[in-house]
Image (cartoon, rainbow, N blue to C red; front, side, top):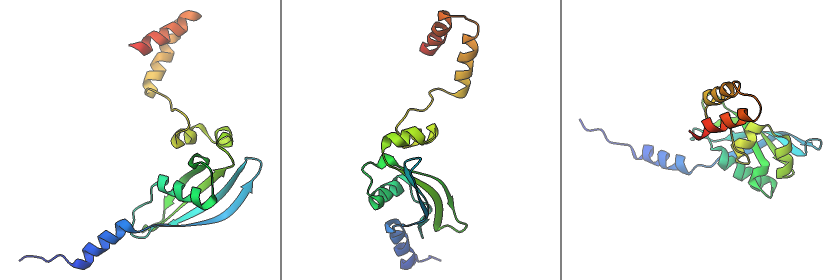
Length: 149
């Protein structure tokens, strides 16, 4: 027996891709000491699994009229059971310099304003332990020689 695909199912899939998300903010606070605005954001996204952070940052930049998208930092998102709603935290800094000053290093790397650590953890530890065998200027030469190989 041949099953017919319902036209309703096809329409809902197509409309899911086009669906936008709604952003609501709560617990808004202006933090003058850390030169930022901070708030909790609720993202309603029915029919979508999640909303990319890049898309959220763009929308929030337009909502709060920031000069640069780098000033917006979002993190800590949790999707509600059953989907359709996510909740996270947002920080909007007054300038990129204040973001670099107050944000943790890993979040600055996420935004793309700094470089992360290169090489694996094991490689860094091995280099450190090889350098222990030398003293003075030879120590830095030993570490650099191993880096080149």
